[in-house]
Image 1 (spheres, one colour):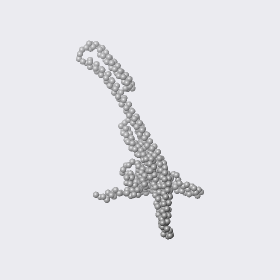
Image 2 (cartoon, helix red, strand yellow):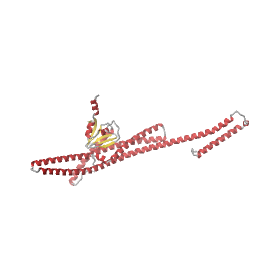
Image 3 (tube, rainbow, N blue to C red):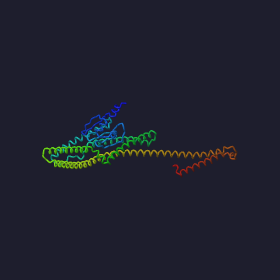
Image 4 (cartoon, rainbow, N blue to C red):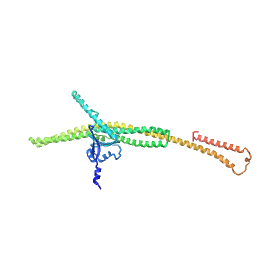
Length: 403
């Protein structure tokens, strides 16, 4: 058994589309384990992006990446890049093009704002250069993914509506096996699409309800805090080295120098931790608000799509109820007609009884009268009509048929 061949096939590289923060894109070949180390993701998260498997829509916030699986958009978003499985799907290509366009426009807008800010700062030193509409890179990529998924589902819902309403109107006017089969297939597609839209809506709602998951998705802030922490550690190491040099060159007491160094390090670490905690708290609150507003906007969009599908489902159910009412009406008419036939058969059976009696082989005086046959027919017919009319009156009295 070729174990090495199996290992190579299991670790085969895959083609990924990479888009960086500047909007530049390229194709890279990376195997699964390298991607796991690069994005610090477990294997189960990468399985969500496997095109060979069908998983429901999911948005996962991890330590260094956001795993997005929304319809055709399956990507990994980090603070520096977006990685998508290389595919010929038009929606994936549209996602890449739209993300590049927004990143480049955002870069041009930030450059223009910086130039304008520098111009204004020459006249006013207190000018604030921060933009309240600034979104980090991962939120921009997530916004494009949500927009692509919501627009794709909304377009499918619109196509289903365009196909459904004429077909349902035709079914109400003409009930046939072909139309019923088309409506059955249409309803199956509607149920599947509603399930997908409901899953996306539930995923967005779950993220909005969990502040911890939203805070985990702020990758740029976590990266900046990590860099500040590393910079602070390097500063402390530099201070230690400077203290050591002073202690060697100058005749200072070793006890006093060690105490001064510990006090300086402790005060610096306390001030740095307080500053970092305050900044991280404020930025986390702001990031949660930014992400929450972003998710709310697309929650409204996907909720309107779900309402559209719900209205279509209710219209189909109303059509089914109308068809059932029509079929019940036809069935009632058939029952009424059968009741009339049964009554008429009973009346005709009276003539059969009379004919059977007169057909017996015995002689009576009635046979000697020439008008006896006419009177027999007249009396039997009148009796039958009276009986038939009595049945009709009874049916009308009991409201068994609209006469």
